[in-house]
View 1 (cartoon, rainbow, N blue to C red):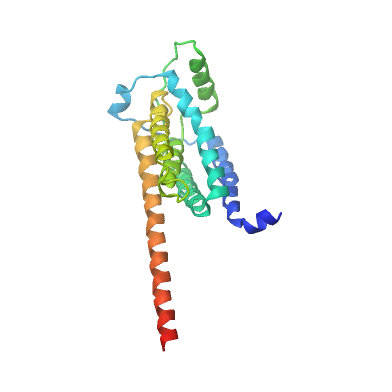
View 2 (view 1 turned 180 degrees about the vertical axis):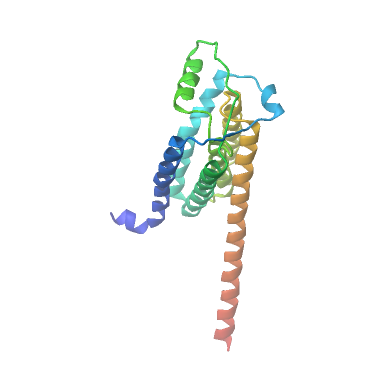
Length: 222
């Protein structure tokens, strides 16, 4: 109980419940008009069921770093929560106001384990509400936070691993036909913009503190 009192910032993670509620409610909504997302590059990307492995890695990768930063790095945790949750919320509004979907899925002929997983994924995750990709935007949010976080930014192996995992997860969404290249690019851009917004806020905050400190020193000198 005392730990919770001294770590109130951890409660920011509870916004995940709000987001998930909104997401699942939106999944129940059936819009009359859906814009199909597609670009020429999508047709050049072959289906490969083995990419479902890095796709599902996302479900461990994101929570692990959220938990790590929550315990070890307050600033990084709050940065990640803002970039990831603000991005996810923005996506929900896009899905609501401009419903979109995919028409990329074709019949899977393979019978291996990964093909069976993709079939299961398609049964539980219909090809709608795809652009921007939350799968991508949250993955990029984690990577950008790792690059900024004081607790890990100087650990090159972790940053390198994060970059590799980020690329694999993003590619996986296209190779198993869960997303178009358009969705992926929009997810990247969204997180980059929000991350830059945090950088600007940090600079403004530091400038304000520095200015306030100079004013205080001037008063003391008088």
